[in-house]
Amino acid sequence: MWLRSRLQLVPVFAAVATVALGLFTVPDSGGPTSAGSARSSGTSRPDTRGVVLAVHGGAGSALIREETSPEKEKAYRDGLAGALRAGQKVLRGGGSSVDAVEAAVRALEDNELFNAGKGAVFNEDAGHELDASIMRGSDQAAGAVAAVRNVRNPISAARLVMEKSRHVLMVGEGADDFAERHGLKPVTQDYYWTQRRWDALMKAKNPGRPQTKASRAEDEQAMGTVGAVAVDRRRDLAAATSTGGLTNKLAGRVGDSPIIGAGTYAKNDTVAASATGQGEVFIRGAATATISNLIEFDDMDVTSAAREVLIERLPRLGGDGGVIALGPDGEFAAPHSSQGLLHGYLTADGTIVTKIFLDESPPGARGR
Ligand code: ASP
Image 1: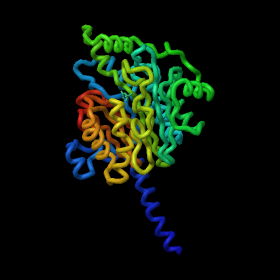
Image 2: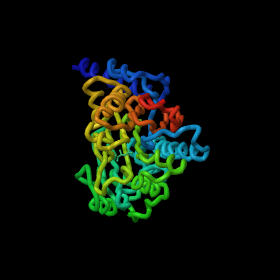
Image 3: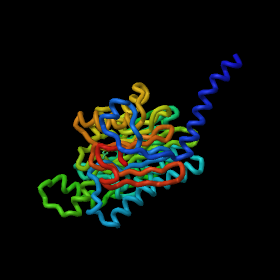
Image 4: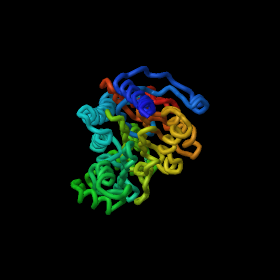
């Protein structure tokens, strides 16, 4: 009996040792792999190891180094790094991965460069409806809001749904009221008004209208959904995603971002994942839940599973985009079939890396 209970403890010690190594050292960065090798072997070299927090600022066309002013480059890198620092502060103070992803996404929601919160895109009726979700890997608790119109930080409303209601997804007026009743100060629709999103709406409504180089570049970033994934000291995973949706979408349209298993998923033994791209396809392909299932049932590693879904399966359904995926041991991948995926990550030694240019994160590759 004594021996049996001791033997049962061996895997626990091994797991604790693995976590300690995975979280507190930063081993190598791997080299590129082909799409085919991920499928056949079920193991691929990840983008990076030792990651504790990662964020994305949406999929779309990549920023081209030669056409990007130093000011614009700085603004995007600062935006992603600022979100990582907000989450880092939480993790350093012993906060949970849920606290960290909420803090990181709130920072991105408050930055009008990104299509979430303040920078949300316009619907076809020139209004704004925002979607967000959050998931805790330890018990698969989740919360989400969709089509909210008066919440400054939808990710905090999603967390309130997770923690203060019996529900997972709340929509529209009911969700706005719920958020206000639980202490989130409402904003009016004009809070979300920005010139660049207005120009993008006008462009979408008049596609033939001649464009300046600047407005073309802004339009290229029109996706711009944000998300975060994290693992904390207890090895608990969490994921969060927030968006204004798609420019010129029908009022009432809901994308993948607030759908658990499509835009967001976290399960402690497998992965925390946040997606961005053509939401309808990510819903039909159950994108982030499929990544988790491939890890759990097909014995794939995080990188192979994320690549399989983003590079192989979703394009066959007719959509492109990207995902940030983080395993409990710090394995991180950011594959994308869209041209670009703005993203950044923080490793356990405190290093922050941001990737915004095409040459830093080529499509179909691992986002290096
Ligand atoms: N996935 C988001 C949606 O369909 C859009 C995006 O990621 O850019 O609402």
